[in-house]
Amino acid sequence: MARWQVQEAKSRFSEVVEEARNRGPQIITKHGIERAVVLSVEDFRALTAHKPGLKEYLLGGPKVDDFEIERDRDTGHEIAL
Image (cartoon, rainbow, N blue to C red; front, side, top):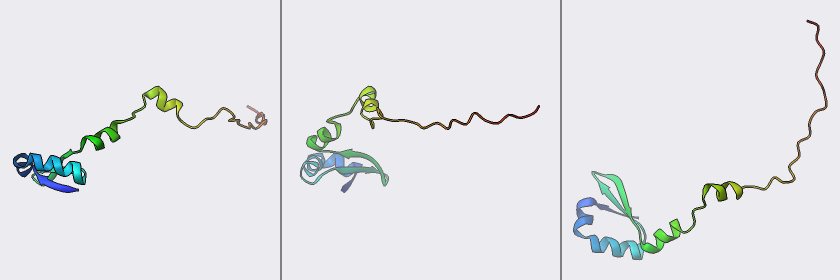
């Protein structure tokens, strides 16, 4: 991924957008710290295409319909008090 300082990205914004479209995400830095990423609209749509809601997420987990637990039939031990 290419890195652009914020000042350079501002002055060459059209180029940053074209690079994002042709070569992938472009990282914007400020004082050497990553602050933002410019994505093509195709990359953005791919990332946000399907976000399940909480109910759909929980129901989409592994199926446990046939889940059985074998319990120990031991009733414990008598103790004298």
